[in-house]
Amino acid sequence: MLWIDDFAPALQLYKATMEMVGFKVLTASSGEAGVKLAAMKPIDLVITDYEMPGMNGEAVAATIKAMDPKMPVIIFSGNTMVSQHCRRYADAFCDKAGNRDRLLGTIQRLLYSKRISVLQPPPRVQASHHERRMVA
Image (tube, rainbow, N blue to C red):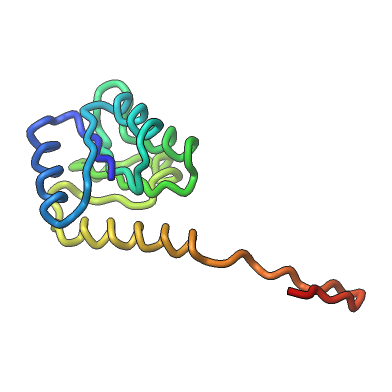
């Protein structure tokens, strides 16, 4: 996963916490650095702070989704006033002051959903109304 936050002490704490439960965590201390890292490294999920100088969490989420629309993005913020526009880009929102188990549950749910969508077979083509049949 990629974790983006401009507050370095918290960023190191989040990295250590997630690595203790088995995740490999890349970190970036700005939105710009995070987007560059996401373009260069294979990642499965992005967690970004909402309020950052320069490129904020909304801009990060929008840019990540433009690069890979299926990439799960979590906005992780102490601010409960996230813009409605931001909600178009983020897959989930977690409160920094909230329960860490809830954050872990959200991460696992999004990673599971991503795997399921990749592993599902493509939809079957239906026979037309002209009585032609598709043979598999």
